[in-house]
Image 1 (spheres, rainbow, N blue to C red):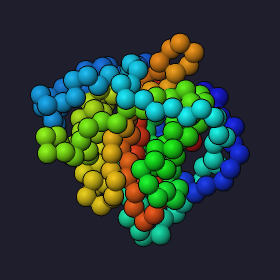
Image 2 (image 1 turned 180 degrees about the vertical axis):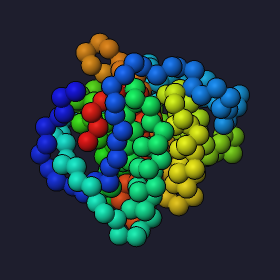
Image 3 (image 1 turned 30 degrees about the vertical axis):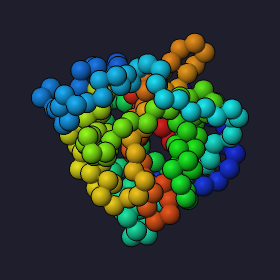
Image 4 (image 1 turned 45 degrees about the vertical axis):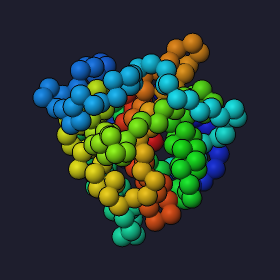
Length: 217
């Protein structure tokens, strides 16, 4: 896929696994049921999101650089998450750690993820819908467990392999949330991409799984 223009510079911790192939089976891993019947039944990774935020302007995307890590949680987590993604992402997906750029709020974190999704998928940020998945409430499971469960829809071993880093993120980062990003190309809504993100050491930290074989940075 053609990547979006590069204009600004930011520090990113990224990993991505890509190998073109057929689409993933939609049933998830057999026998994996991490949150049971209380799962958000209306969640559809291939359809339009129910809760939508829009960005009107197409802001050029940032340059991606791989950092070596400085011993903080965000850097150390990225190393472990990168290894887990490499070991489990099937060829019809594209898995990555999120860009480790400074953010000070949930809104800033979402804006950064939006730009990242736009670059990977190759669409303007304004053509991406976002759904926040309800989690970490008295009546729902943790965001990490919810994230891992929904990865069962992507196939492969993502659901089981990324559960541990997802729970680690839950315990060590602030403002953790699971979001579904649904890019649109013309009148077509592309498969939803599943992200788990938080803030640690003053930067965005987390993982995202794209449900198509994009060319991740």
